[in-house]
Image (tube, rainbow, N blue to C red):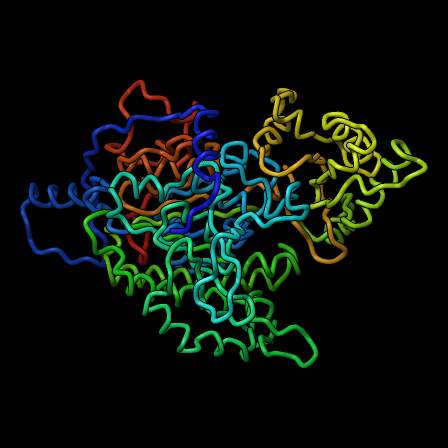
Length: 593
């Protein structure tokens, strides 16, 4: 594994700076649950049946119970989608979670920087940006004098391509992940893998000690990884790439149920023709990812070892399409229904290979998405699309007029909306210190239309109002990067003159699904408040391992079968009583019981 200068120091310092919150897991003895209708058991005495079911349900990472955990993250999937399209969903797929799993319908991120990289880091560290350090997909590096990508690592190389290219790693991450704690607890016996079309989604899902994180080369669609994880692709992955499976998707038409062509993945002369652009916004991208996931499970013999294995799959197609067409388009509905079918097929694959009593499933998303501004405006809801470049020019004009009227300067280097990255050198030339520079920039941003702002120095001191908004922006803070100001946008305001974008503290961006399926979980819909930070500590507690180092989430005890809940006096549930509906047996098909 390639060395990463300063990683250990940053990681150690971050651990010392945060409170490590733990909940002791009780002794786990499972209740007798009915077997899946798909499983035929020979006649046995009741005591023997209870013993078998108890051994299946008594979770322990150390004894491969369950054999495999699969976490599905759908990039840009709002929490209301499952209710909006529920009547269109057949058994299997999403209904595995809705009818036969524990579904938290009120799950919201409690921060404002709802981007892909922070979202995946949050899900698997159980912390927000002020714990894991990932503030955005990219940020301004004052030493390198440029924007850097959240996973770029110049000490590594891409593995899987003939040409040399800079690799990726989690070296900016300031906290460990669920997969890291699983590796530590089992002393490396557990296998941990992650896959996504995007490198940042895969890298932050897998964490530091993953056996590999895989993503695609955007031009060719070939699956690649980084020398941080391994020196070469395994044979099964090489064979997958050599079989040219990506090419079969390049000339397909995506059609709706009536046969109308929604999109074509065929290259067009004179237009960009990368796999990512052509296939990425169609359901074929998810088909491709699940193909690779099946090969990975088989090739790496997941679920066959002495300890629990973990696989995370981040489906990127929904995000690529959603940015273009918004959450209310017929195309997005068709994408969701296609994803439902793909999940059902993948869950059937897991059932055939492991038996679903030996698998836990979890579902969530890294963020939501607002409607297209024109859709909101048509309903008389104030909405606005703006240009980040125009906004940056306007802020710089205001700052120059105030600080150096005779010498206009680019005081703001970049606006990664709504984050403004400042040029410390420009302010130093005007003899302006950081705190004053950030405040002046914030005031210029308010003149440009932002409702409010939070500065880096303000957030570093935790000097925010005791409000929900203040907490969200405090959770969005990171020491990574240079001077910055976080603007608070007006609702339904997005950067970009076409399509839509996500990065706000509002529910259309923060509301995501959080669902679990498996023996420890009591089926039903739970309307108690939950957050994505709860996923990692809940799974860790059930497995009998430590929660990630900076986890602030709670164990979702209201959704656990009685024997999995903590002893009286342990505090991990909200004060409000959960509403639970439609209890069901552990099965992918058939009626609820």
